[in-house]
Image (cartoon, rainbow, N blue to C red; front, side, top):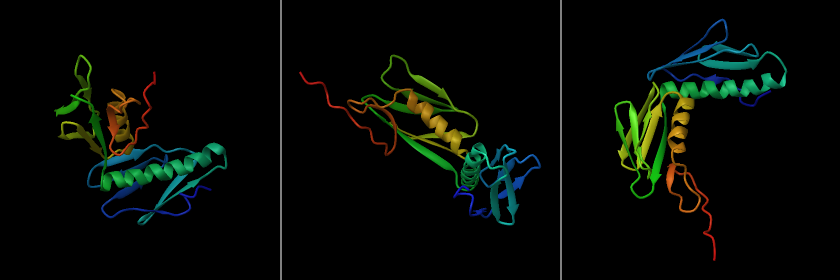
Amino acid sequence: MSRLSRRPIDIPPGVTVSVASNGSVDVKGKLGELSLHGNHNVQVTVDGAKLTVKRLRNTKFARSLEGTYVRRIINMLTGVSAGWQRSLELQGTGYRATTSGNAVGMELGFSHPISYQLPKGVKVETPAPNRIVVSGIDNVLIGQVAADLRSFRPPEPYKGKGVRLVGEQIITKEAKKK
C-alpha cells in the first residue's frame, strides 16, 4: 500500500471536491477549478472534509497509480486554494525577457528574438529584465511552461549562461588545458 494513501487528505476550507460515477475528480476553489480523469484501478471517496484514495486491484500498475493519484489530488487542492509559481532567471550578457499580452519575448543571444505563446490558465510576469515568474493553478502546466522556456537556451556547462530555475545549481566544467 502506498504510504501517501494510508492517511486521508484534508480538504482546505473554501474548496469543494466532487467525484463523478466514472471516477473523475473535480476540485473547485477561489482561484479556479481543475479536474482529474478517473481510472478503474483507483477509487476516490469524499467523506466530509476528508478525501481518501484506495486501489481496487493489487497489480503493479494499480499500486503505482495509487500514490500518483494522491499526489495529483494534493497538487490540485493546493493549486485552487493558493496557486503555484516557478521562477526562472536569465544569465548572460544581453539576455532579457519581456511580456506582451499572451506571449513572452526573450532575447537569448540568437540572431532573432524568441516569442513563446502561453497556454490558457498560465500567467507570466517579468519583475526584472532577467527574471521570469510563471504562475497559475495547474502544477503540471506550470512546470511544462517553465521547462519549455528553459529549453530555448539551457545553461551551458562552462560558464553557466542560459535560462535556469531560481536556485538551480549548475555544475560547471573546467576549461580545456593546453
